[in-house]
Length: 48
Image (cartoon, rainbow, N blue to C red; front, top):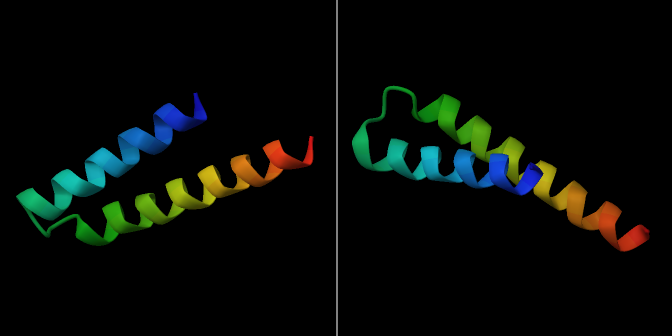
């Protein structure tokens, strides 16, 4: 589930770079959130 959300956010970010810059800031914030969530998931997975 978490990986799916991260991939969707990354795809939306890539589409935002190609299509327009109107929501560029918002999409970049979503990308940063997605990367943080994935990193936290990887780190927590290694601890278990």
